Amino acid sequence: MTNPTPPQGPPSAHPPPPASFQDTRPPLWQVVPTSLKVAVVTAALGFVASLSVSSETVVNGRVTECSYLDVGAIALGVVTVALVVAGALGQRGRPERLRMPLPLLAGLSVVLLTVAAYHVVSGLGIVGGPCN
Image (cartoon, rainbow, N blue to C red; front, side):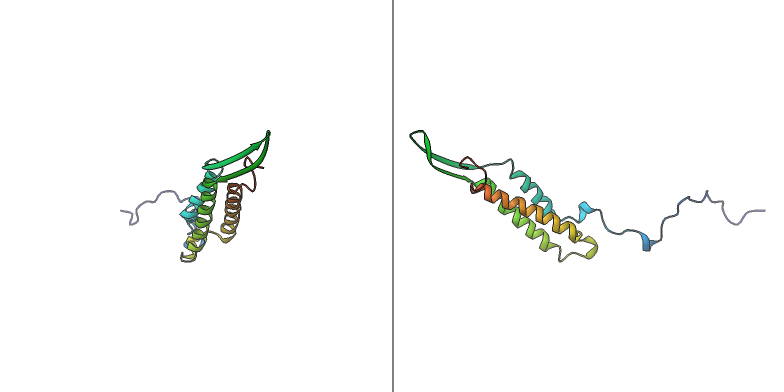
């Protein structure tokens, strides 16, 4: 006599959850827009890259005039702002499941824009620099 059903292996201890319970969102790194990833790099570069010009006028051993400009910091600050804006606006056309979570997008944008503003202000010599 033959058995009509073939033998099956041991039942799984944890069967897969139903499709309705599975998380279909991709990992966070994949939903972060590329422009925001590049903005993080440009914001970090602003702390180490410099293309500056400065001049001092010294009369009788005292500095009477000083000017300072860091074009590199200003440029990286402006590029960071443009990348943040592009990343935030680029979220509008993406499907909901591929969008970066709004609180994370807002928080990252605020941090990046603050760093960009610092780079512009320090590049103009208002904060930091040899003249202060």
